[in-house]
Image 1: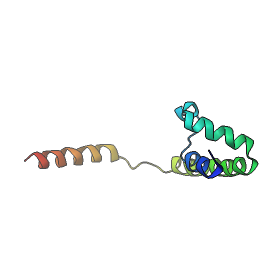
Image 2: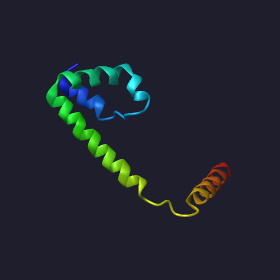
Image 3: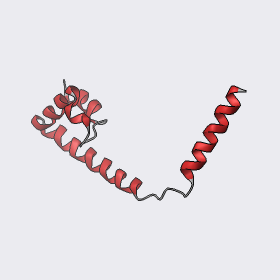
Amino acid sequence: MNSQEAKEILILYRPGTADEHDPEFTEALALSKRDAELGRWLQEQLAVHQALRSRFQQIAVPAGLKEQILSERKAHVATARA
């Protein structure tokens, strides 16, 4: 695996999930520890992902959204069967 291939894999990496046990991620993570440039790139990517995750968590979910989605799905499914 080269650095570019590792980047393509690690762009999808989610720390703290089952990704840590996936052989493909494990190999790419190991390479990021040996390749200083790849390691810096990964740290930057993880920081960006964490910042985005944090911002998304700050967005308030509108009241009644779940019920609206479920009711619209029921209406859509009923229309498709008719």
